Image (cartoon, rainbow, N blue to C red):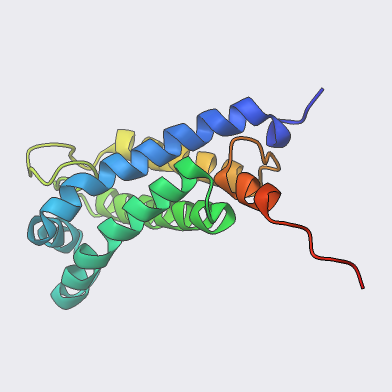
Length: 159
């Protein structure tokens, strides 16, 4: 019996789930970086200039990370990035909850009335961390573009 870390189909399902979550989460942020900067500022964790810089860069990192996970390209790196981003978001949500902030999370929509920070968001973040770490430590190579690229490279002659 295959271990969970090497089960090709479980890894594929986790990749599709995490990949689509990150791609979907990036869309509104890419389209509305100014609104995303406000969402980041609402957490009161970083100065406004850091929030603006983060709002400009992070959505593109999320998008590329999600696409990399879906395609199976730069897989270890994108899985590590997904784990780190999920952990940072969980810390931010936990901090907002501990301080009693009534703010929108800024996850999938920049509409301030959508997706308030709550314990459900904390659970979602925890699940994203778990799935991302699962992908990071998975050993399945099936259904990855990286595998096809490696297989198509001609072997170098032995010395």
